[in-house]
Length: 419
Ligand code: GDD
Ligand code: GTP
Image (cartoon, rainbow, N blue to C red; front, top):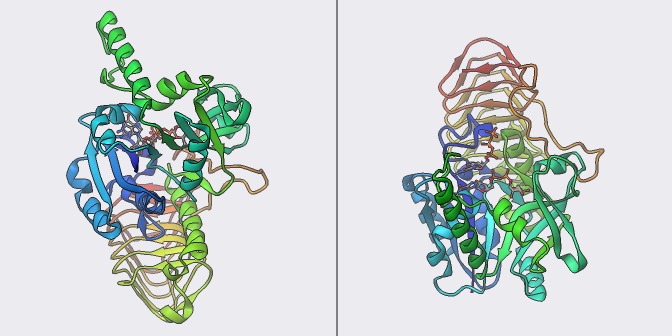
């Protein structure tokens, strides 16, 4: 029997994802029509013998209750949310809930960062892990020299063994990076226990936890991976399929495009087609069945339309996510943007952002995940985001701007944050 754990963090962080995470927890933000972590759950349900998914985070139970219930009934496996009383770090939560993870004696369990997206190679990881008799297998991929510094970096020894691991190094270590997807054998809890007791002792000696952390805080990367490197039981499986982090709203547009492309390969029924939806579809488009789209509108490529959204005549949408209950009025244009729930875009308006894709000229380049402002205090060019229930008047232009919820915009804006 196998299990999976999805780490989703808590409401205090994920700041680069605002304003999209103001109304909905970031892990539930829809990408290609499904909440971000539903893609993880779906990948888990395809692994033979996997029948339980535990979501661990610091969000209030109510934020996830409905999602968890829907997922259990959709996929027919056990799905539960375990709430941390305080953020315990990427391994502290797992250690805290170890009895629940070990119950039923799973042979192995996956650990998945909720803020990554990928064509998850889970079955391959099971086979690899089994062959190596590993304690822990890390899904790894290649990054550029410069970008590798933003990730966990590792150097491989013989036969995929991790000889050296450094989390977000300050100088170059390796271009092989940690994807935040792991397969662990339950004996890993012994390593966690050693770290836990060592931390307790240290805190006791120093009479403090002056870094503000809970004494039960354990970082999977710094405390566990670094310790296991060179032990002969930590392995990495390099994978060259699509993988990305979702830290900024711009990376949600990028993830949307790739998940839609995966639908085309694996579940083409999920995609809209000109025959099925009566409007003009270009490339990969997802339209929720309850959305109403006028036949003269043109959608795609890489567009997702949420539930109960209304798209009027002559609308053109490309490279965008439109959430539920939005109203896109006649002849408006939306490019490289995210339109929030219940937002209305007026007739003949133009909403446009700047694409922030990985550099196509650099092999293995990843999304940059830039902060909102650059060092000179200027807004970095980014996709345009309209928060929840924004109203944009007719015939207006909105370029590279971020609009917080409930704003009424009656003029043009360019490179602005509208608070
Ligand atoms: N439950 C819980 N509790 N989850 C947490 C906590 C916590 O206290 N802290 C972080 N997480 C979750 C986050 O939501 C995310 O899904 C994952 O754990 C890792 O988050 P970060 O701590 O922000 O790390 P990171 O994303 O910057 O880097 C990690 O992922 C990279 C790949 O995306 C590291 O594992 C890197 O080595 C790796 O390259
Ligand atoms: P910046 O503030 O701009 O760095 O953005 P950020 O908060 O998105 O960056 P960070 O990498 O710190 O957080 C990304 C993800 O990790 C989010 O999903 C958070 O929910 C989660 N996260 C990070 N640290 C913690 C933590 O200590 N506790 C919890 N619960 N979640 C965390």
